Figure 1 (cartoon, rainbow, N blue to C red):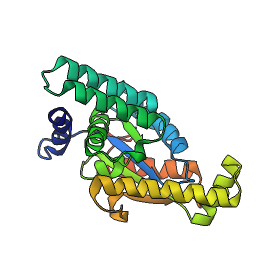
Figure 2 (figure 1 turned 180 degrees about the vertical axis):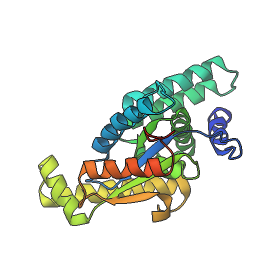
Figure 3 (figure 1 turned 180 degrees about the horizontal axis):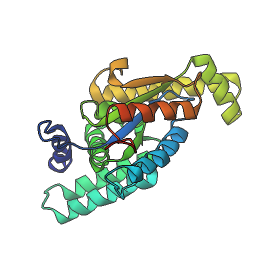
Figure 4 (figure 1 turned 90 degrees about the horizontal axis):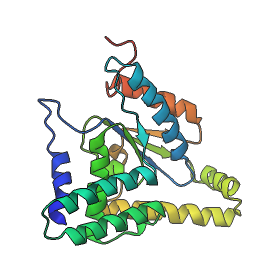
Length: 240
């Protein structure tokens, strides 16, 4: 399995800056518990698809935010390649791919600790980035893909007390329940990042950090679009 999975990790690291050959474009969105990354990802996918159609390239490829359906499609594609290839460990590779896919779907991905499973997740995340025009929420994608150009790593944060009140409203929790929920969710995500890169996430792992408590979704989306245009990750409709 290592041969198969590592081929994607190696391929993604072998970026040719001289020729401009690299994966993407893509976005990653990391968030603290209580911040709604999914809503922003959905809005961005629609707006960025519109920019693709209006640009000079007139591309017919839409931007997709990675939900469990998109994730499963990529896993199925990789399983097909394993079956078609000559890998001594094909059965093990397929088993790991399916296990990670199930963990993604039921939100137990952050409980994974097995090194091979983590490498499998990295391989899938790399494939998603390589496809381009993807928005990957969570799953430590930002730190996995930190050194890849042609992307924007976004982080959503908010004061703890604000997040507690929001979770109380969204889930009808008591304050104690909301506080415990946030603490557990943040600790799981922080622990998983440490498994991925051997340390806690730092501010410089992200390109931009938004205070979700003080900004509306549309304000964050507008800011992201402007950053993408200024970094020339996407083309403005008026560009020559």
